[in-house]
Image 1 (cartoon, one colour):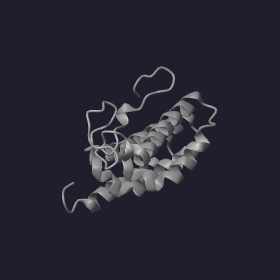
Image 2 (cartoon, rainbow, N blue to C red; image 1 turned 45 degrees about the vertical axis):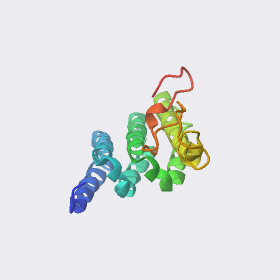
Image 3 (cartoon, rainbow, N blue to C red; image 1 turned 90 degrees about the horizontal axis):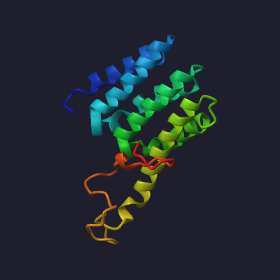
Length: 171
């Protein structure tokens, strides 16, 4: 992130949040959600600095009457969490609360999207708790080795390795 762009970045996120994601028009809300996820992706590691601004409008859309919008909400939040990685853990309780409501959603697409997001959060939480203790992680307990299941120590979390429960394919 270039220096002195913080004000501009916050302005873009605020515009996407207030004028689009929280709009009265469903198509504008969908566009706002996609835009917030795109901002997170563009910011990369720096998205952690703006998580509160990125997550709050997305969580508001969890309660929308339109099931397609609730699905887009799951997708947007999945992308934000995937990029922000461990920085999202301070928001874990709020995210989990929102997901618990979507787990019982009558729409199967929303339920499926919430399950993918739930698996990502669970895998991230497990990695943050146990990853440093895995053999090959370079910790004092297990020195670095060629153990094939250990992620490289340069990555705090690699969500590319999340497997689905049904067929073992990567998400």
